[in-house]
Length: 129
Image (cartoon, rainbow, N blue to C red; front, side):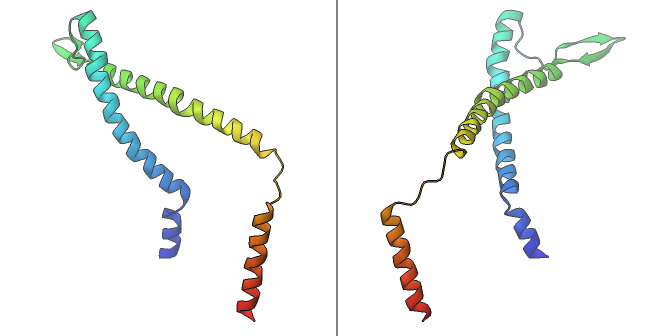
């Protein structure tokens, strides 16, 4: 039972997913800071207030705050753009190149590799006899 669990955890997809989650969390902090400081600064210079957190309106003296939603949407758009342009597009191009490369024939090993394989096989025969 533990061996199966260990095999599951050490499977490539699970490790890749764990790395992606950690990097995504760290990247989320960078994006939040960028949206708050840079984008918020630009909005503050144009609109007068860089803080989206309190933006909203009142209905029957009840505040309806839209600022945090606007900030989340800006963060999402930044993350989506970065993932698309800096991750997805290059990976797709790389996969295209690899696909084209897979169609080439496998070359025969060079003479020195063949010689080393023969030596290995002879040593293995001596050891087993």
